[in-house]
Amino acid sequence: MSPETPPETPLDTPPDRLAADPKSPFHDAKALERGVGIIFKGVERTNVDEYCVSEGWVRLIMGKQVGRNGLPLTMKLQGEVIPYFRDLPRPEAGPKT
Image (cartoon, rainbow, N blue to C red; front, side):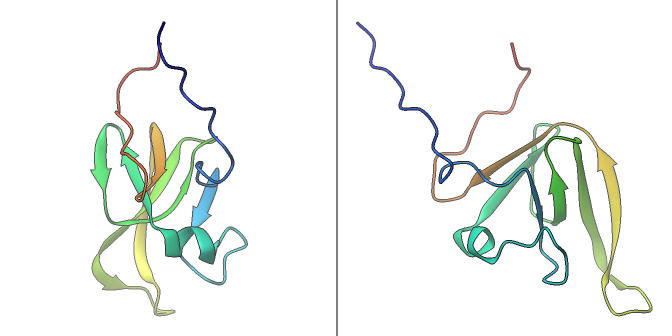
């Protein structure tokens, strides 16, 4: 008999879309305080400014450059996005079966 894995609760799953910019409607201060990690295309990314799991994209901060409005320059990339809370075990990235 194998032990059953407990079902994920909404508290264990990061939001589908999250932005670091406080002016964004997708900003969630509680989730950001808890710490959200992002695995994008199988690689841990630390420069993610915004992500969307359902649409499959991330917006990455491009170095220290800033635009004319003072916000960091970003680049939007398409691919598999796996968010997780840093206080929980890191999920394994790989092909879904």
